[in-house]
Image 1 (cartoon, one colour):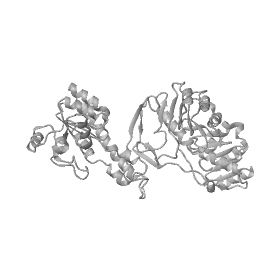
Image 2: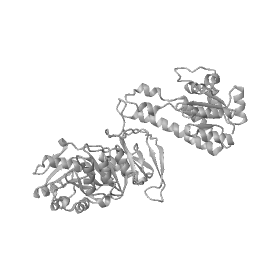
Image 3: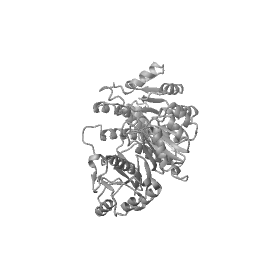
Image 4: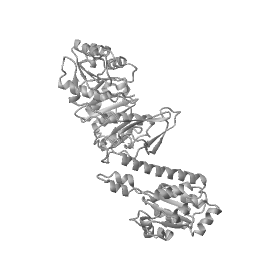
Length: 515
């Protein structure tokens, strides 16, 4: 394939001078617009301004410049006699290569305080039209939207190897580029930034994600997998974390580090969470991060081996030395002090991920799960139990310290797979029963794990008790107070059992199933 005329109009000017110069050296005429033309001329690259092609000036502050038959006819014409004769009669020259990337819409709307008019002015019209035209006619036109591919395209043209496979690959990337762009606009207009009432679940829902990396395999070695990032989500989270060290992340690593970080961000105090198979096997708050980590580890040191650790404070040398003592897969935290990083990087396989300061939740409001033939979408469970929402239903009133402990327990149980029971003591997880088919079974597992630590602890349940058997089991182990949503037709039986054993029980009215 020979490129006789190339149209270049880019917002991201990375490598564009070298690319255009290479095309000129291959004998191509370069046509360009506004800022791109200025950049090329300043670099000494011969360039034809778009108005010389269209015979029409840019108008409406540049809103209209490439929307013209001389441009789109040159791009869309099939390389066959009928179309080429039509172009010749109209004095239109075919365009063999289109290099376009679009106005920086995502970057614009990510700026604090951006207004709707500012955002709308950064919606590209002519660019997507040219990209789509070129991609539609990929058999005769090369379309490049990614500056990283300039060198590859130049080399293929020099060798005469810009064949159908490359053109198809570039076209697919081009359509993905415009689809992602439109999805970003849609997400912004549907988002909370707009003053009008938003529809959480619009009739047509678009999401655009870009592949961040191929993974070694999925949940199991026989499954292929990849990780895609949603560029519309801003804020500290697993998807936006930067890997500082260690091996590549696996599919299961990403699931677990997300589970760990979403729990640890719930706490204002220094906190540590250890996750194994998407469930917390350790969680604690303390005055210092190192103390929180040690308390979390004590919950289940066996399960913590090979686990994922999340912290809500910058990792210092003290906590790094403690984490160095056992085998861990991943540590995710707002940051790492230089000394801590030096300690942890002595384990070359240990993955270190930095999220930046936890300043609240991310902009991601939804949980999404794929089922065969469809997608389930729900509002993320960000609910937090507040003191006024707690209803004491037993004769014994829990002490304020017990109430604080109960709230801690309910915060943890929200992140445990249902049916879920957790036991906590002194802001430390001491027992977990996760993913059981019945609630009393989950309680027995948690109580057995806690052992003697259950005496004086509190119990949190993600849903109501269908029978009083869980209360009876808890009483025998020395549990002092229980927090649960309430709402069972047999609530009175559970309350009566708690009263008989001198336990306190509170209802929240809010279930936290996690399937």
